[in-house]
Structures are given as structure tokens and as C-alpha cells.
Image 1: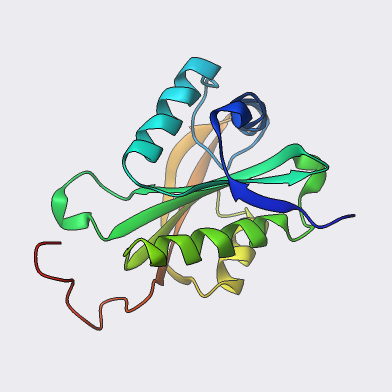
Image 2: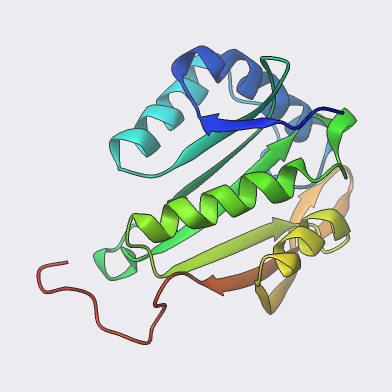
Length: 178
């Protein structure tokens, strides 16, 4: 397999992104959405992140988008402005090939460059060993599990919370006015 190109996402990528996410919603437990959003909604979400100054990347193999990752606000209140939550989704056929790791590493670097200090991973389904593993490889620490908080596919699902410091983390104060 050739190395993927990791690049900033563009609106032209949104059809592929929508299809990848649709599969995750319909067949996976990484997301607790039950109905897949359409292209219009995915475009709205994309624009909100980009307009908010958050990083959003795709992985492309032979010019075909096979995965994507973004960081977005962890919570809406201003005190959380230095903390982001990440999301990574891949086509099922390319799982366990290191592409999710490459996307996450790029997302971490870009989030640090934008001044974020903490990254939170909210992983759907405590049985999601792939996601837990890739986050552990990149320095995330387990901070807890919310047991049985989601119900999908006829069963109760946990969410796993992981966290990683970015850049200076909490070792220094942000610049005045930040």
C-alpha cells in the first residue's frame, strides 16, 4: 500500500467524508448517532469547524479520500477554549494500516500550533480497541469510562475518555487576552 497523503480537507472532499461517516453511523459504535447526517448537514458541520479555526484533515490514497480527522471545541463555554476534542473516521477496508495514527499525529501537531493545550478523545464503545490503541500510542492517558451511557444496536455502550496535553499543556499560563 502506498503512503497516504494527509492534507487539509476541502469542501470537494465532503461527499467522501459523508459516505465514510454514514457507514460508521449505520454499522459501528464509534459514534452514537443513530441516523446518518446528509451532505448538507456534514457541510454545515465542516464549515462551522473551519470558520471556528479548527483543523480538519483527510487521508487520501491515489487521490481518493479514505479517512478524515478533525478537532473541534470540547465544550462551548469560554473557559474550555484551549481544549479540543478529536474525531477520526476511516473506511472499514483501511483499518489497522496506520492511517488513523498518521491522521491523529497531524491533528495533534496542528492543534498545538493553533495554541490548544489539551486534547480529549471521547471513544464510543469500550470494546473499540483500535481507537484506544492509536490514542495510547500518541500519548493519551485513560481518564475514565462512562459505563452504559449509549444504547445502539440493541445494547448498552460505554464511552471511554482519554486525554493528552498539547504543547505546554497546563505548565504555563496562556498569553494575556487569550
